[in-house]
Image (cartoon, rainbow, N blue to C red; front, side, top):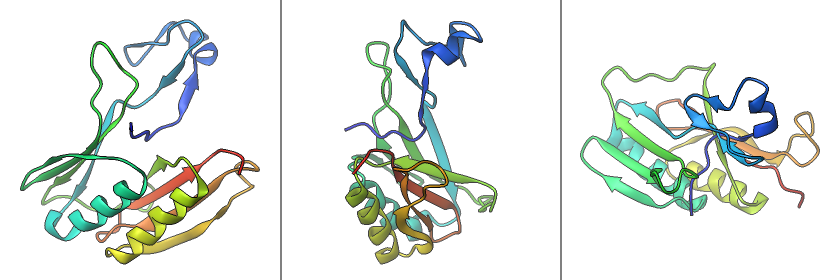
Length: 162
């Protein structure tokens, strides 16, 4: 299962600016996944590792890398298939949470959003918004917010009608 971190941009909107955005060909009427890969940094990866492993498992994202200074989830893109997203959680002595930044992960169902939230709370995260509808975004926006053990703000969202 691929991990989708960012939303998709319809190529009609992309074509208004030309056929290429950030070096990615938008194709003929296909959706484009905006982010290829991202990294979240933490000071103490050993403390944060159980948290990230639990929330990613709840969203169906497979752990594909585990070293002393990094863990990775999802699938890397290739020349044959560019429809994936990859997340790395890296150890960095300079890491720090920023209240103006958050990472939002797509969930396949409201149940997956609830599982993300519960897994995070059980593994050292803090609640920053309980699972529920957020109709001020749109009528089916079902999300939940967490702070990881170091204060990085994370969200899971399901956009589907339930």
